[in-house]
Structure formats: C-alpha cells, structure tokens
Image 1 (cartoon, rainbow, N blue to C red):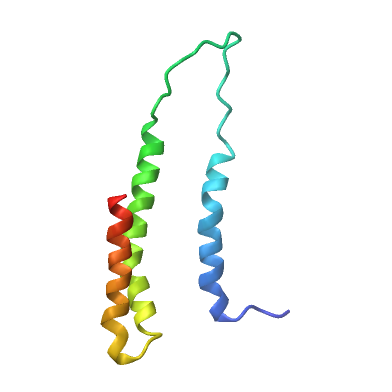
Image 2 (cartoon, rainbow, N blue to C red):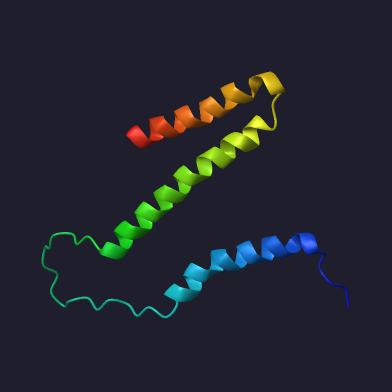
Length: 96
C-alpha cells in the first residue's frame, strides 16, 4: 500500500480545519418560521459579530506574513518598498 509523503500532512490538516465549520453546523436545527409574517427589525446575533471580528483580526495578522512573502520574491534593494506597499494597502482597507 502506498503512503502519502510527509509534505501532504499539513495540507490534510488544513483541509480538515476547513471542513470543521461545516461539520459543526450540520447538527444545527432550522429556526422555526412563524405562520404569519410580520415585519420585524433585523436581529444582530453575537455569534455573527464575533465571526466577523475574528475574521478581520486574522486578515490583519496575515498582512505581515504576506509582506515577508512578497519581500522574498524581489531583489534585496526593493524589499522595504514591497513591504510598505502591503502595509499601506492594509491601512487603506482598514479605514474604509
């Protein structure tokens, strides 16, 4: 039997993490809908807000890594400029 090389193990781990939310949400029961539809104000759920805040924090943490990745692909004299471009774009997006 042929086994996978060790280089695939991080990919399998990340794939499992990607499938985790779908597995957790599979047990969620649907919300019952009322028989009469009345106009109601939208409700802000705490879980939705937490998900958006955590996602935004992860994107902001990803930016320095992206800057280092792009810095490794350019010549030595252009590294600082490339890293600054990543941080300027992050600042621009966070202001919007």
